[in-house]
Image 1 (cartoon, rainbow, N blue to C red):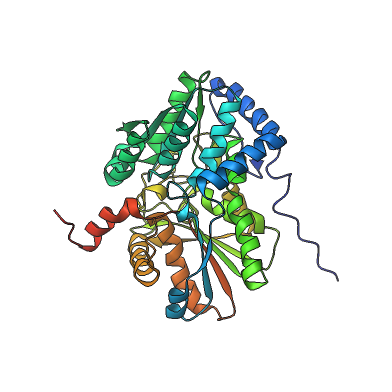
Image 2: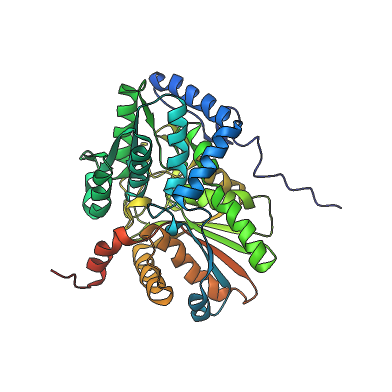
Length: 409
């Protein structure tokens, strides 16, 4: 009996016209936001088909952002682990220091097409806020960034960067004072100023068309990685690894490989202090189906549907929900989702720094931690690509305090 042909994962039917990835996704927003979201969807699809828009986007990605990024063979890490050959997709080399600018640039160009004069954004680790402030400065747009007060403290360097770029940074002091609350405040701002303002949402989450749009602006990561590994090795990788908060860098890497059954994929969530209530941000290891901030996905919530507090050493992964496309890929069994604890991420942070001379973002260190676990169990003729989604300058002071390094006074 012939085996059935696998159904394509990367297909135009996913998401559907309502932005649903099977049970997940959709548009769960106040009535006030239905019209601007519809406008955004229509303008985005027009831009996708507009050669002039694509030409302009490609120009800025190349000349301003610094694409393509390198696919770098981590020789010393590979040798020390003694297993699979490890490549790093160097998104940390981009202008502003992380993958976030791929999407911020694309959305800023959409905002210009729509005649918006003001952009807002939310940020956890600060990298999306910096990227948004950067493109706003470049295009002459007013910019406001909402950031949890806790994250403002642990990511102070990025707060200064945003202010230097001309953005107003609003510390959010409600609730847990982290990313979820920053998103809430950004959505309230958008409802109030919808005529002049575009919300540059920073991850593959939220109401349709954001998960689709953000994924498509980031798929350049996977498109480049695919071409680069074929040039370097003459074949596709065996395993892709990426950290997953909302999931933008991971879906950007994974999406172009979804129809390649030989390529395994693993998204790495924040295991925090362990899988105990309110001690982690691993939605696939403690979450349940629910609706939060515009979409349906896996959410960390109690039996009454109240959103639970989260914890991660990494501000960018410290979020109670995960992007709806990741939820769908998880339930389809196409992508595996693991987690790395704070301790493992900190260990990976230091190991990559001292073996390869590369200081990763704490978010990216979660993916490196999973690589450290898996590579020794794989054969030397197998290949891993780790998405190094950002650099760790912003995390140096925090990590130094965690591991007991003395900072100069």
